[in-house]
Structures are given as structure tokens and as C-alpha cells.
Amino acid sequence: MTITIKEEIYKGLPASKGISIGKPFVYKSESPAYIPTDGDIDIEKEIIDYEQAIEQSKKELHKIYKLAKEKLDEKSLLIFEAHLQFLDDDVLHTQVRKRISQEKKSAYVVFDAEIKYIEQQLLLSNDDYIRERVADIEDVKHRVLRNMIKKKLFSKIDENSIVIARNLTPADTILFSNRNLLGFATDIGGTNSHVAIIARSLNVPAVVGMNDISIHISQDDYIIIDGYKGLVIKNPSGRTVTKYKNLILKYEEYEKTLSEVEKVPSRTKDGKDIKLTVNLEFNKEIDYILTHAGCGVGLYRTEHMFLESGEFPTEEEQYKQYRLIADRLYPEDAIIRTFDIGGDKILPESQKEANPFLGWRGIRICLDKPDIFRAQLRALLRASNFGNIKIMFPMITTIDEVRKIKVYVDEMKHELREKNIPFNQNIELGIMVEVPSVVFMPDLFAREVDFFSIGTNDLTQYILAADRDSSFVSELYQWLDPAVLRAIDIIIKSAERNKIGLNVCGEMAGDPLSSLLLIGMGVNELSVETTSFLRTKRLITLLKYDEAKKVAAKALTMNSVSEVKELLERSYNKIIKKIY
Image (cartoon, rainbow, N blue to C red; front, side):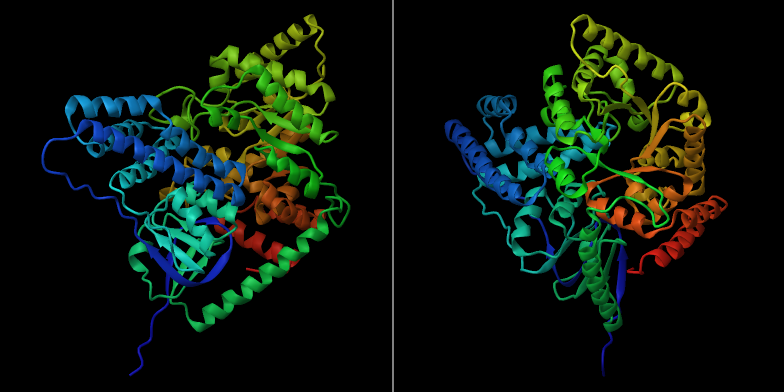
């Protein structure tokens, strides 16, 4: 009797694009077990053991960091830098040594208790970013505790396997990468979790937020991981395997065609120029822009300067950074956004809020901290002397905010004139459109600024009341929802009426189906991540603007996400040979 193994499909969040087929490696992380010793504690020995464990942990992390530098981008490296900084916390070490001496408890017990206290404080925060740091601390804690009991770290997996786990630490992820891994699938985590970020840097598929995939998969299974659709297929049928092998070949062929559009204009087949720019966060990405894109920057995120050091950079530090960007990109423009901190990014000081995404964030922080805001504006104005810098302000909600901003800008201009410091007298000021209040009265805002930049990530979550990082409402968070499309249409038409600039800089801009729609709706500038630049440019060169307009007009009459997606998929597949 032949036993037929049934194909099973598990759904999660697509975190890193790609497809892999192979054997799983089910990884189960083990916490180091402490076995108390009989008799009195030798305080001096416990302190020495603790200090040696810290030093050993630092050595291990430095080794991992060195390996990570060979494989990851600057943004991903920040994860490991944060771990090393935590181990250099003298306040923590002093407290541990003090408690060992006073309480006559083992270093293991004291350190474990201290870290648990820190974790509890972080978990009380209503800020998602801060709560996610618990995972970082947990990783460092286990490393130190393991070194206290001198237990060897397990870090080897079978080569050419797809790692399945409840969760993975950044260190696990980067160490496993040496084994030619084919992908990751985890029970927990979001699209901005460490596993997701590192998987994208490694260019391997990843699916996260799968709830219990680590329970359902065993070492004996054969699986497919689909990072495009967020699927893990257990024991796929022969037909499914053939389908996915063909898809892999098609994607490989498609990737080869992208280099062909590097040097051609960003222009539709019927002659419509679409300005294509990139989102920028780290200096390393400037090299990509100069080598492959040859374009401007539609969004430069300045908050990374704060997040890296934990404090606001000085005016001089900012000036040097903004001047570097202006100099290297010249004559192309760079739109630089003022600090966008709060919500999903750590706040500059401890603030407990019931709804951080609706609280103290973006321009609200800047206006409440005028000295910091003035320093940033002065640095931006000083760096604008080349004439290719524009300033953009995030999380704008009211006209009063815009008018207050303009008063600050005028004050800083006056200061610089008094000191005979050159700057661009006609520097353009713009706002991010990401709050519904701007959508309801766009003409009023348009008369106050030089350009709009639609931040589709936040605009979508605020219109639909759906947290963009929550796996529980991921089905609701859809930028192709008719309500979101109508809001974007209102803003586009307002910009046209008032003859001001407009771009789209959220994830929607780099999504193939959505970029086709946005162009048809009348968006003349898209700012995308560097990883999406060539794909988006290729689409632009293959489509006809007149056809895109017809598609957009029809999409705006539809009443559901599914209708819009079906229309866009049909239209996209006519333009570009269907892959998926």
C-alpha cells in the first residue's frame, strides 16, 4: 500500500523576497541552565567569573561583527553595534558587582535578575521599537550566562538548508549564513525584525510571523519557502516543485535584464518623463546611486544620526553630513527630511504613551525642542549653498505647524545673513502627506509649501487604522484600498492645481503594481529603495503613459482591494511578461 504525503501550505509575512527549495533545519534555541553549587559563595571568584564572561562575550560579538561587516549593509550592522554597546555599560557592571558583594549571591543569579528587571521596564513601554529591544537584551543575556557556565555555543547547521525556528537572534542569523543557507522561516517577528533585515541584506528569502511553523516542520520534511507571497509549503507535490523551479529560472532571467536600463532615460514608451529618485539613509548607499542610478534623492532620513548615538547630533556634525550628500550628488537634488522620531522609532527621552503612533513624534518633537530644531535647520541651510538641497517636514497635521516651521526657517536665514554665511536663499520647503487632516484640506497646505511628498506607509495606516507592523491586522493594511487611492488622488490633483511639486516616497512607490497605478494617476516622481530602483525603471520604460492613465481611471472607480489588485495584475502582465 502506497502512502501519499499530503502537501501543506503555511502562511506568514513576506519579509525578504526570493524562492528556495530544499531540506529544513529546525533550530531550537536552548537557554543555559544554571545548577547552583553547595556551600558559601566565593565573592571574589564570582566577580572574576562575571568579568571573564563579559570579556568572552565581547570577543564573540566582535568576531560576529567582523563577519557581519563582510555581508551586511550599514543599517544591519547597527544591530551588532548595539549589542556591543550594551556589554560596555559600566553602570550595569557596577551594579552587578555591588549586588554580588552585598547579597552574597552568584554572578549568574545576580546578572540574570538585573537583566530581567531591565526587560520588564522595556516591556512596560507603549513604543513598539523599545519593546523590540527586549529581544536584543535577551540575546546578550544568554550569551553572558552561557559563558559563565562555560557552555559551548551551538552555531552549526546543515549546509544548503532552510532554517526553521521559533525565533532567531541576529548572531544566530549571521553565523548560519556561513553555511550557504537557503532561507529563514520563524514563528514570531515582523517585516522589520532583525531576521527580516538581515535576510534582505543576505539576499535570501524569509517568511516571519508564522505563529507555529517550528512545530509543524521536521528535519525529515522537504519544503519550499516563498518570500514573495509569504509561504512555506511542506512536502510539495511534484507539480508544485516543477512550478517553483520554473519560477526561479524566470526570476534569474529577469534579474539579468535589469542592468540594461541603467543608462537609459526614465521615460515611458510614449515619451512621458518620470523622475525616479532613491530613498537614502546611509553613506554607503551613495555609491550605489552614483554607480547604478545616476539620480537624486527623494528622501534622506536624518534620524539615523540620532539612533546610532542615542543623542541628537550637533549642528556641525549635521552640516558635514548634509554637505557631503549635496557635494557628492550635485547637480542632482536631495530632499532631506528633518528628524522623524517617535512612533516605531525610539524617542529621544523616556515617554510612556498609550498610542505612540498618535503621540509625540515627527515634527511635534522638533517644535517642542526648538534648540534642536534650529540647529538642524541651520545645518541644512548652510549645506544648501550648492542649490540642490530641499527640506521636508514629517508628520504634519495642521496649518499652524507649517507656519511655525516657516517662522523658524526665516529666523535661521536671518541669523546666517547676519554672519555672512552663504546659503540658498530660495531653498524649497515641503511637507510629508501622511495624516488624513492634510487630505481634507490640501489646497490650504499647498499654498504654504513648495512641494508635497506622499508617505504612503503612514498615510495607509492612519486612513485604515491598521498598524503597518502588526501581523494581526496585516490583511487590513493595504495601500491599494480604495480609500487610500482616493486620498492619494486628492493630493495629486491639489498639487497640480496649485502648481507645486509632488513625489511618492513610501513602499508603494517601489511596488511594481502600485508604481504602474501611481504613474497613471499623475505622479511624475517616485522615490524608491535602492533595491527597487532598476525594477521600477524597467517598468517605466516598458509602459505607455496613456494606457496607465486608463488603468488608473478604472481603478479609482473600484470598491475593494481585490478588484484593484486583479485589474493591476492583468495590466502589469500585459506590459511585462508574467513571472508569478
